[in-house]
Amino acid sequence: MALKNIKSKVLRVYPPDTNTDEVISGKYKYDELDLKKLAVHAFESIDPTFYADSQKVNDPILIAANNFGCGSSREQAPQVILACGVSCIIAESYARIFYRNSFNIGLPLIECKGIYKAAKQGDELEVDFKNNVIKNLTTGKKLPMKPIPEFMQQLLEAGGLMPYLKAQHK
Amino acid sequence: MGKTLAEKILSEKSGKDVVPGDLVTVPVDFVFGQDGTFPLAIQQMEKDLGTRKVFDPKKVAAVCDHASPSPSEQVSNVHIFMRKFARENGIHFFENGDGICHQIVAEKFAAPGKIVIGADSHTCTHGALTAFATGMGSTDVGAIMAYGTTWLRVPESFKFNIEGDLPKYVTSKDVFLHIVKEITADGATYMSMEYRGSTVDKMSVESRLVLSNMAVEAGGKVGLCPADAKVKAYLKAHGRENEYRKIAADKDAVYSDELEVDAAKLEPYIAVPHRVDNVKPVSEVAGMHLDSVCIGSCTNGRIEDIAVAARILKGKKAHKDTRLVVYPASREVLAQAIKLGYIETLVEAGAAVGAPGCGFCIGRTVALGDGEKVLSTQNRNFKGRMGNNKSEIYLSNVPVAAVSAIYGKITDPREVL
Image (cartoon, rainbow over all chains, first blue to last red; front, side, top):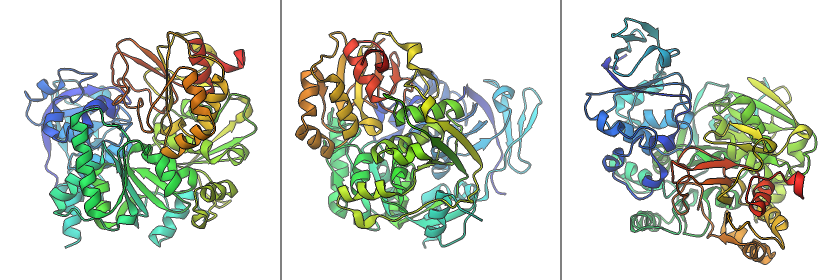
């Protein structure tokens, strides 16, 4: 598989059922179409310094427990995470619509049982897509990750759903 | 092998004999978005596909419901952006005050066996009319608008067998709150939630819309009810009887999970902050002061809900320390409620009745103040959902909300009515 390994620091660790209202509040998304301007409000209600901190790390990684991204279908949720520079999310599990939305826009979501307890803010991780392993370079611990489904890999490689479909319909 | 409702519809639509886990490409019968999601779908379509032309204008709708009537110049400009696209393409366009996308789609477009995709998580609502209906994001909806098809993973199915008579003041809302308490907020993730049994058979389509609407709150992809005579009558009442088809799950269908619900043992429930699965019997929270009571939304803003609220509030007044806010789910619901005298009753009881739309549910046109506590008939009580992180949202059925408005505190209707 052609996905390039990701090596970076954990920016945040979010609890179970972190929802899309917490990722980006509905009060902003109805009157702002510029995703870069929306991004400054990412996680604002539960984590007011998220945006500022995200700008201090290169390609940060987010860690979460189960059911990350539950709630609304708002694609602005993965969009603002991407706009903050996040390289990937590693969680115990994801809500369905958030999962689909993220791959559609080229944000890799990785499922890994045990990651919520195995990674702390500031740890350096390596996502090894070839061997489907998450290595915590800070603690030395390794965890197996669920391989990304073939179709989702194709979406990522194409740069998202739209470029993928454009190539298909040529 | 027997098929569940989801497997049946997806087999037919894909032309393949599908099993859970299969990826299929299907034609989409109806696609829609609202003011929070549709503009981004247009942008994605235009930016990445270089087109603004939809595949079939009869199968596409844009609805101004979430921030409607527009509360700001920014939202007004977003609505202009939507209107321009709608005019160019000749798609269905629903204005400020026409109502909530899910109610409009139920009244005018959803029907058994259809694939309905909406850029809104509560699109699963249309499973009550036996449509394979699911929420997606703006990019997916943009792609469907351009090509008319989408890919779907065939879901595993979770059977909810609901038997018996619901006690007085216990509604389909309580059935769902009981289910989500049992299976938790991710208990049916990626699954088709299929509701059946004598309780569902007896329920009105309006009540079934509540079960299907809230499927996403347990992670469900769709929430399906059987196509029966009640669905046929609902379609007939909306001038669409010809769209009826009987579709039922096979007797030997394979479900990956099952839950039995004894309807007679259910009570009115309250989902307490800040999680939908944080469910308690009303008796455990009764007596708590409320700053506001909100009746409406795509969950409980239908005519049967407005009728119950009006019946309870007739000749009474909302408590002086509690604001009562009512938002009918559509223009049709409001018109009916006016004709039947319900609006007069509610207004006399002190209600602020708003133009049909999402109103209070997402805090964009009605918001809470710091420290306020609200009892609402909507589907979500996430922190900040109603526009303020420092407020608390409690969820209930309509009878509990209406009676609580009179007393100004969470009140069990079985105690006082």
